[in-house]
Amino acid sequence: MRTIAIISQKGGVGKTTVAVHLAVAGAQAGYRTALVDLDPQATARKWGDKRQADEPEVIGDHAERLPQLVEAAQSNGADLLIIDTAPNADRASLAAARAADLILIPCRPAAFDLEAIEATRDLASIARKPAWVVLSSAPARSAVVEEARRGLEGQGAQVAPQVVHQRVAYSYSVIDGRTAEEYEPGGKAAEEIAALFAWASEQAGLQAGKQSNKTARGRA
Ligand SMILES: Nc1ncnc2c1ncn2[C@@H]1O[C@H](COP(=O)(O)OP(=O)(O)OP(=O)(O)O)[C@@H](O)[C@H]1O
Ligand SMILES: [Mg+2]
Image 1 (cartoon, rainbow, N blue to C red):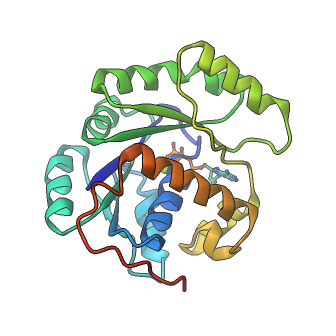
Image 2 (cartoon, rainbow, N blue to C red):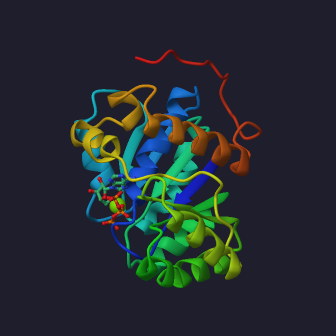
């Protein structure tokens, strides 16, 4: 099993959006996928309640229970565990970072967000796990994206090659528990999530960590 933690001390940067999209991408790729929601706001859990599909399994719990949840997921045959976290939650974010094989830090390419990223990067380095910034809610065709990438890399951050752009499909699809790919198959959001998932799963060593027999499931 491989675990990807989505953390950011800043609120509203796209953590849950990235978490649910990667979790569904994982399930669609044939990996047994569970999504753990450590945020007391329970955004991902409520999304899961509205969802008309069995996968991914969505579990809401307290960060203190994370070791037991990881163990349960592992013994239930999960291949991929995605952990969504709350903003301003040092201890819970650190617990998630420690449990992870890969940490993703969504960040908007805007000055205040870029400045705020230091605290989250500190948590990732305390956990000593590979961490990548994912530029999210990025404006299409704008120079700010490459500027943000250069700025972050100048600070020593690793920035994921894939960018999650600002798209209506992301905010609209989740209203009834779907994802952009399910709302608009083949759309631009679907394409960039597929690319982000392919990259992230490789970074996390997902193929090597697979437990069950991989059966590519057809898309509903
Ligand atoms: N790429 C995107 N395109 C369009 N809307 C987006 C995108 N990413 C996030 N949003 C919207 O921005 C808002 C905040 O996103 P989200 O809930 O994923 O952030 P978060 O970091 O999980 O927030 P919190 O810190 O409160 O948990 C939501 O309304 C979401 O639909
Ligand atoms: Mg959230």
